[in-house]
Image (cartoon, rainbow, N blue to C red):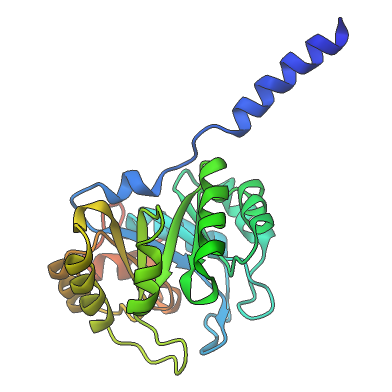
Length: 255
């Protein structure tokens, strides 16, 4: 029957949809520090970050510099991003793409899947434990990886009551926007005291500007860093990645 043939074809299509995507966790398993390079036009605290915003050129430069993954801001009102931006960049790279968004409902997780994200960000500060568990379960169903972002001990405690594998430590205080890299040091120490460290991958976020910052974070034992503003403002992002001692690419020049 024609209906049986149609359903068999649909089963193949569904299987293709459910296939594993580009894995950030596989990158984080490497001995070298993993770099997630962010594409961000603006922010509420800094305003317009780059007037001559050319996301495709930025992506090519990140790849030339040896970035391991790409972060794309999709919030439109506050960060001047868009879902269409992520969709367009997805076609141009095989690197894992993190959708940087304020996700509060499972429908946004499904949306992330369909626009081409490999990884989503969940911010503990805007979620309760049940919401976080529900969003993590939805992501697991879709084979999306998740970075759960924390800023303080209370948020860390909440995340430790979930199945989260990747913890992002944001060094920016969300109340006054001040940045302190010691936030990573403090929360890593607390994590060691609370549970075996090897159960998690740790990404440091915000305020990373120099090779000295990278060296400090390496000594702390983080697995990766997410860098946005520093690379977005650099005249040559690929050269900046090299300057930060993070270059793994073959080229020292922007594409």
